[in-house]
Length: 302
Image 1 (cartoon, one colour):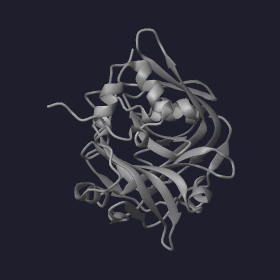
Image 2 (tube, rainbow, N blue to C red):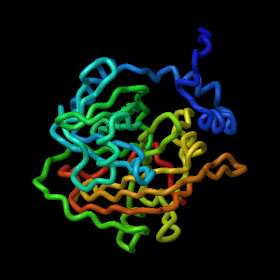
Image 3 (cartoon, rainbow, N blue to C red):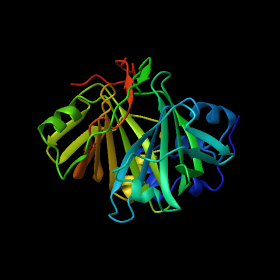
Image 4 (cartoon, one colour):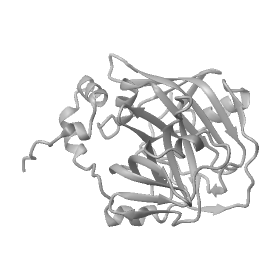
């Protein structure tokens, strides 16, 4: 059966995403996949959110302009749908998180991602946040799920009594932070564009993120859903925020800087990220996850 042309595709894709789709030659596929993006929360999405102990938020700090990705954790149910297009988060990021100021401003564009390593499922909701007496609410503009590709499976987690340590701040990665990034199998990526923000997931076998200097990282952009929301945002606005989590100790390494995509003649893509600010918080999350089972979709590293 032939699909009807997508209406008002500008609501789904801006010029940055369109430019990348056209360069890669996947506009038709992007239009097809883009039909899965809605503005409302279906019951299955609402039920999924209420089972999650963590939500990752991505936004730009209005004071500094820096983009950050931040984790928020709580007992399942701390994130829930409170309307057909709204979610409520029982509390915001921990004290001292670089997104605290941004989320205190009503109307801040924010991207959110809830990922469940137990089931390799993930859901993204992008919209605008406003502070509430308990935490924050996000009014949705886009709601969609992603396939389980590159998401490592972790069978279970436990909540541990931890007090977050004092955040260590800097402008480049020290030796231990560089090793931590090299050993990572997952990170979360926040990007922005003129009309909003997005938070997405990147995964691979340990070593898929390369550290080329204290201020330079790179990673291969593996084949995905052809929408190119993240790379499209970077084409429009190079600001980005990265979040690396220690799934056992709860440490959170947050990086803010800029990123650019390099397109090779053989069709491969590499994203190069320049570090401008670092926030390293021991024990930021109370969650301790079981060891990973790496995704069978992860490419073998050279």
